Length: 434
Image (cartoon, rainbow, N blue to C red; front, side, top):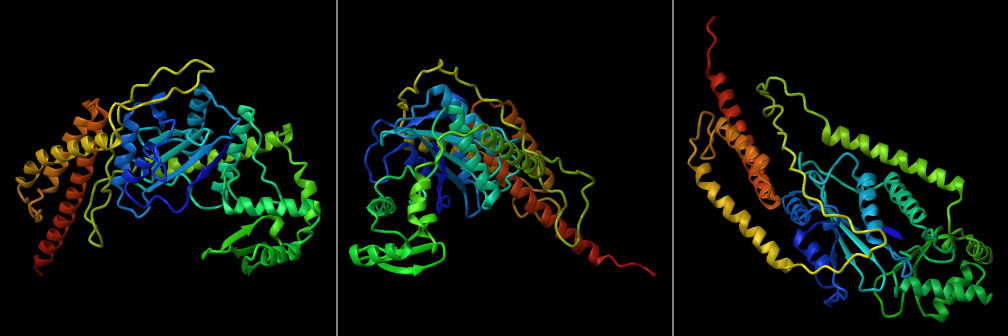
């Protein structure tokens, strides 16, 4: 198995991403077998709506992260093994943040013949609304994903993912790509002793394949295939300036498929350190209790300590796990995705309309609330919404109430800011008698 984070995605609304996961493929073809919603194995189906809400309520440019755990054709994970992978995924990449804080949508695809576990999560913590990136850039994050992949393969008894030194660096489970064809061409030429170094490779690409070499670096080459406009960058040991292809071919044939005890201990230590580092970061960023001292007016800015503590959503009901060795059954939802999303959107809209008259009828209050109510009345409304959330058991209604709570909090903050400005003006008019 291999784990991959999709790049250059995550800036649009949730509808596109979820429709792709549960609907047709990128070519518009119906997936056969149909996609399987895996969240029912560990949590309630409400996780899908929770992920959608957090994505669509995120005002940042980057709204979600998605990726896939892909298995080879001969790797057949059982339902229980898939459950364990999903649990280990949360423990590794979201330590300290449960399903209420950072829900993850899991969907299984099998139309290509192999098993693919697609995952989708919002780049926002549900409690604090702070930015949450499950795959931040940098070598530490990359190493954490690589260590997770190695440990899972060892745990499941699958071969380790070790790309051939003669191949271009690309997803080893990606089939039918130009990079794969280039790699196959290179391997065949090296085996036939027609290519011994990078100079020979460049000559074959330009004269035999009629490809244009657009750029050459110490550790890469960029080529433009015939009939194409965009260049392909080829990186890896085989494309360095001092590559010895016969030696690389020899090394490729001796690549290990299992971790030895020393390698396993090294990877486990690295993985544990990576999880601890991320857990400490999450604790400091998302779980640290703010110091609520007396709120005082800050005349250089706005009111201090304006954040609120959104209560946890009640624990969602869990489904009974399947028996050991049982394969994941096919799942067909009772409603289509569009119907479910439409119903959820309609519920939010009707609830918001019911609440709106109460908000507009509030008095402006001291400090110039301008029709949105005073900070005191809005704070009371927030307490009322939090009480409703605590007593509500329907996950959809909980997330609808959370949407209202976020909106009312924004109104409260605006009212506080206006009251602050009004107080500054009032104090400015007071004349001190000598």
